[in-house]
Structure formats: C-alpha cells, structure tokens
Amino acid sequence: MTLDKKIVKNIAFLARIKVPDDSLDQISEELSDIIGWVEQLDEVVTDGVNPMTSVTELTWPRRKDLVNDGDCPEDILFNSTEPNWISDDPSKGGFFTVPKVVE
Amino acid sequence: MTSLNDLTIAAAAKGLKDGKFTSEELVVAHIDVLDEKRSLNAFITETPEIAIARAKESDIRRRSGEKLGLMDGIPIAIKDLFCTENVLTTAGSHILDGFIPTYESTVTTNLRNAGAVMLGKTNLDEFAMGSANMTSYYGPVKNPWIAQSGAKKGKHLVPGGSSGGSASAVAARIVPGALGTDTGGSIRQPASFTGIVGMKPTYGRCSRWGIVAFSSSLDQAGPLTRTVEDAAIMLGAMSGHDIKDSTSVPFDVPNFTSSLLEGVEGLKIGIPKEYSMEGMPSEIEAIWSKGRSWLEDQGAECIEVSLPHTKYALPTYYIIAPAEASSNLARYDGVRYGLRVNGETLDDMFESTRGEGFGEEVRRRILIGTYVLSAGYYDAYYIKAQKVRTLIANDFKKVFEKVDLLLTPTAPSAAFSIGEKMDDPVAMYLNDIFTVPASLAGLPAISIPSGLDGDGLPLGLHLIAKPFDELSLFRTAKILELAAEFDTKPRIAT
Image (cartoon, rainbow over all chains, first blue to last red; front, side, top):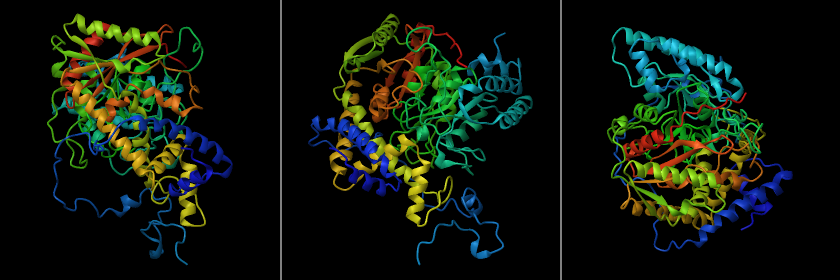
C-alpha cells in the first residue's frame, strides 16, 4: 500500500501535526516503505486467532472507585504555559488559556 | 583500594555497612566522574545537590541505627522518562520543554524509599523511540567504548537505545546502576552495546505509573548495572504492586538475589533456531555457541527449539507500538504543560506545537500509528498485528512446556558509529530483532556482557524466561557472567 501525499496530509491532520508541504514527498515515501514492510504479516494465517488484549493472563485486582485525588489547582496549573494563576484579574485566574474557540 | 566509582552496588553497600566510607564520600566520588565524563552527553539534567543532600540523609540514618533500605546511600541515574518531583523531566523531547512534575513516579519512589540517591536524569531517544540514542532533542550520547580496529576505529559509537544515557553512564563508571525502560529492547540492546547487564522484568512486575508512556502494553522499567547480582538487587528495590497502575501484578516481590548461587544443573535451555539470521556476523554466532557450551559445562541441557513466528515479531511491533504511541502522545497539545507554539485557532495551535515539538522519528511513528488505527485500515493492520502477537506469545508458551529458558544473542551487531543507519528507519528497527519477541509476549529477559568482537567491542547474550520467573533468569545469567569473565573496562571515548 502506497501512502500518497493526500493520505499523508489527512493522517497528519488527524494526528494534529503540521507537516510542511515541501516535506510531503519524503514523508510519503518513508511511511510507504514502513507500511510495505509491515505488510509481510499478510502471509500469516490468523483465521480463528483472537487478537491479544493483555499479555498477562490474570484477573486484575480492582480497587474501590473512590475519589483519592484533587483539590490541588496549583499543582495542576504548575506547568501551564500561560498559567494566569497569580493575577489581580479574577477572570484570568486558575485557568488554562487557549486561542479563542467561539466567536 | 579500588576507586569508589568502580564499586558495584553490592560492594558499595558492603563498604557502607562496614564503615569503610560514607554515602557522601561515595556520591562525591561519582559526581567527580560525572564532571570528567560530561562529553559523553549521558545526562540531560544533573542533580548533584539533591544527591549530596540525600547521601547525607542516608549517612544520618545509618549512624542513628535506623532501618536501611536495599540500596541505602548508593548513587544511581534515572532515565529521563521517569517523572521526578521538582526535577525537569523531558523524555528527550522538545515538546516537554520546562516540564517539572509535581509528583514522583512509583518506581523512582520505591528506589528512593530503598535509600538510592539520584545523581541525575539520563539522556534517551525521544519518547524512548530509537535504538541508537540519536533521536534525542538533547543530542546523541557517546558510547564510552571505542573500536580498536576496523572501519569503526576513530569514530564515536552509539550506546544503543533508547536507554542510551543510562547505559553509557553505567559503563563509564559514572554510576553503578541506572534505571531504564524497555519497550522493544531499550534496556537490553544498549546494555549489549556498552558491555553491561540490562534486565527487563516480566510485564507487570514494575509499576508504570509516572513513566512517560510510549506503548503501554509493552513498556516496562528495569535496571542497567555492571553485574547480575546488582541487577537483582536493584530490581528488588524497584518492583511491587501499585494500585495506581492496574497492570502491575499483585504479587509479593521475591528476593531476587536468592537464586544467584543455585547454578544451572538440570535446567533445560532452548536454543531457538529462528534466531539464526541470514547475514548475521559470524562473531555473533560464535558468542552464541560459546554461551551454549558455558551452560552445558555447568550441567544445563541445551535443546534446539522452534519459535516459528519469530520473523513476524518486528513488523508486529511496528504496528502495535506506533498505534499505542499515537494514542499516548495525543496528550501533548501545548495547552497544559511543555512547549506551546501559538496559532490563530485552537487546531492551528495544536498542529504547530506538535509539528515543532516532536522530532522526525516520533512524528513518523505517530503518523504510522494514526494510519493503522484509522477507519478502513484498523482491521487490516492493527487487529491483524494483535492476532499475530497472540501467535508469537503462543510460540513461547509451547516451548516453555519443554524448556526453562531460552538463550539468544541480544543484538545482531556490536555498537555502530554515530550517524549510521539514520536514513533508513527499517534498518534501524532491525537492531531489536532478538529483543522484540520477548517484549510482545511480556516475558522477563536479560542481556549479559559475554565477550568482545574482533574490533574490541562488547557483545551480549540474551536469556528469556517464563513469566515471573526472574529467579531462573538471574541464576542462569550468573553462570554466563562467571564463565564469560567479562571484566574489560571500556577505553573511554572523550
């Protein structure tokens, strides 16, 4: 399967990764090589084989579904690029900020 | 007396116990070497102040007769994939610029509780994606070994990857032990390239909580050390059930050092015939058959076995790991931490941040992962790979009805030069051809330095055991270690 420039552009959009137009050819070639190489799996007969969901054949222990975290907004915002935590303007305090989403 | 930085974890622990030196002296000796060997670029962040403070705390604990941990006062390095409280954590990526976790990973917490002293955070392939430590935003790491002859003479070599900084630091005697992670060979392959011991425990033995996630069904933490005994000590200090990771197993941690002197008499060792690859250097074949006779000399029985799906392990891995990575790395959006590249719209900000923040190999794997998970291709690639993964795991299950362990080479070559294989992703992926199958099956495995090739570069042997049978792994590894008498020190590259 060849991943042409159109497919690459689409998966780059799905993955939200900006790919400059002038590198599309190279990326499409590299990805096609890798996909071509993994397609050797088509040789393997897998009829009736269950896809693996976990390598460990155990019944995992369950914990109680309790709130065990929270009440730490300073920690949450500690690494925020634009924290606006220490601000005189309460409307700017304690949020993550992003570009305007709605008009 | 041997210099303090040459001591193994076990010897350093004994020296501390006997009062030969203090933890502070031990740690300062290692910090001196850290300074001398900075050109290896093994560390992204050095934390000498933290190390000295924690060493002093250990000395106080010891003097006042408090209960001491398994690694009390011993310096270690931490792969920069583990979140460490108040210490920069980068995963080797630009996209985590300035990220300072407000929490500590479970494994590093366990090590800290065992008294281990963190000297710094080691360099790695970006998000642990690589086999040469070439994809780090912080630059390549040098292997302390240099070739004595051949085409690689005079060139700097890679330490392997992704735990390249940890491997280089242990081989260069900057630390006696370091923490790594292994997804498809990221502990074992660098251990082989740098002449040290690298161990990946059974999936579930160590908690993954607080480790920057790459491929969650494969990632496991493990130790890189200079001896098998040290690997057993360090694994003991790292493992254990953790309610914060639902895939960590609720088992008691055995005393991993307890089997070291048991020998291999009566053990059955499988030699998988599919691991003999066309074009494999004869030196790798030679060290493999040496390993076989070393085990036979000590009373083990070696039997040829077959793992018929071996050749499909690598392509299976390169569907599953990128698929999981594309999902795990979706969290890096520039909103909450790390790099943000501003844009007109929210999507524009996401795309610019991720386009600039991820390096080439990470971008490539996210794109592959996105593709194999996308509508219309999911069954053909992802589900197909998960089915083949079942067959690969079944191969192991079947041979483990007949044998106790498997012996293989760790890597298909010795360390190569910095810059080699960079223009061909698939050639780079082939480095992990012998380590990936055990990863896909979640099995414990270890690489033991076993000899030198014609150019004087180290080669490793690889043992794979049944799930949760680390004890057989360590006792057999110990026999190989004794037989190989590998005590060569790297001629340090500068």
